[in-house]
Image (tube, helix red, strand yellow):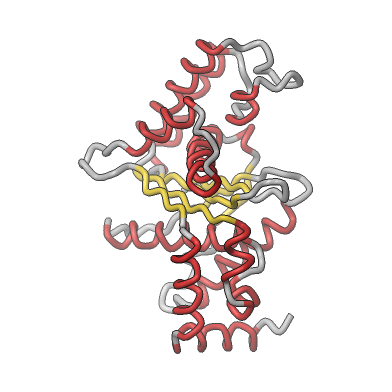
Length: 268
């Protein structure tokens, strides 16, 4: 699964998005992506930079038609090779104000941790439903240089905790890596999904007008897949639901025991 995230200090929303891509289809995806990049003349597709036509980027002189054409082709490639997608978004202010400190102490003080943990749980549920016996290989987008150290530590905590509560299945969460988007076409594709879901979350949380490209992309990602099941499951958790989750987790005896055991094993 390819995972992209966004939790920069200036952003109001933290989000994690992932796409499940069968390993046997990666080579074909890479080949199709290489053809698109050569035809359209780009080396690293970063959705937000492209949409903004950043003057210091390779998209500075792109017109709207070219941007729309490439975006449509990227969505097509992602849905063609991706089996299922998930996205979880949380409003940072809500997380700061309603999640109990006892949960943050173990579950992670950063909003991004909550999003990643929910993505991993969703991937697990999907794998169980699909009766998948081969563990996932997680590839995380290595994004911002300033925050990548903390982000890496948070991801490792989430996966280590998942491993600790699944002792019957050792090694299930140890096959992961952090890759540069520029070098991994699947991450560039997933970046468009994450951007679309982030724009939708801003619209839901703050009433920010939804950009046409974001609305078009989000709606296309939400369409059913080949098995007539929704291709994208996107969650923007409300403040009330987040508060309810925190209270239930705090009072759950199993959660209390897990937190106690984790703190005993990791006192720092």
